[in-house]
Image 1 (cartoon, rainbow, N blue to C red):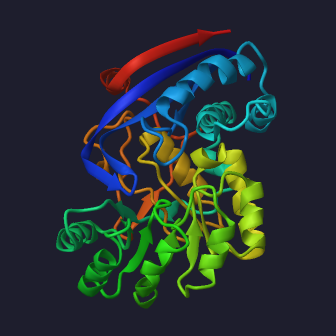
Image 2 (cartoon, rainbow, N blue to C red):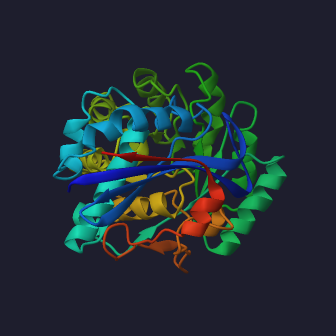
Length: 369
């Protein structure tokens, strides 16, 4: 694929309702849409870095800089064999996995369009629908949380994840479990606790949760291994897993029993598939997390989650969970069995709505080789 041009769109998209986690509250999401022109085709990718460095150190601003000044120049005017070759070409750029993942996703889209194959087929997907759930942000009170959860259950979601933080954890989870004794329920702390303060979470062991996600620091493996010994409930790692190497180390030290795989967090689909393969060979279940993606990133997540090792419901959700208007023509909807259908068209299997992109664009940059 000879790369002629790369266009960046810095998007700011209003959410249908505010989303609050342990590291903050947002009512609009920022991301970067990446368009790569090669061989008469255009491939699209999404860099999921948001405005603020809460979830990770990358932001839409730092990703814009790295894409413009380092990653785009590494491939512009060159014949790139494919996503794996791209990863080798940018190996000299330390870190910045979300920026790399966004550009790599556009290359996967190009490859699929060139070969007439869907992304799921390219990755080795094994199903045409994937089991999904919904992530529920912090609410005003435990009662309000239970009411919000009831609304999502009425929409057809069969797995619920609630966000927690110190002071808003056990009582919230207990309220949801009392209201809905049989639902598949999990909690996500987004690194809000220390090894000592996490002791307050011990009552969660009695709530039959699927798992407790990322309770400790975003760069920690060791203390998670110590915490897992204290809990019957599985620990799931998210922010701590930045590469296949981190996944291997986490499994070797028993730091978790489940891994959340986000392509953006680990640097791209190439690494995401490698982590999937590693966990599958070790008999460790994985699931696909979400970053409030547009239809571009959501299509990539669905293709990834179609791989055979993704045996747990993902945080993918329908388009209207987050956006009244998306940047893709296609909208993803929830099937009656709490699944979403995997796109089957060439590449990502979705098309961009230019008018929507223009409406949400706050900055645009075209880089020509």
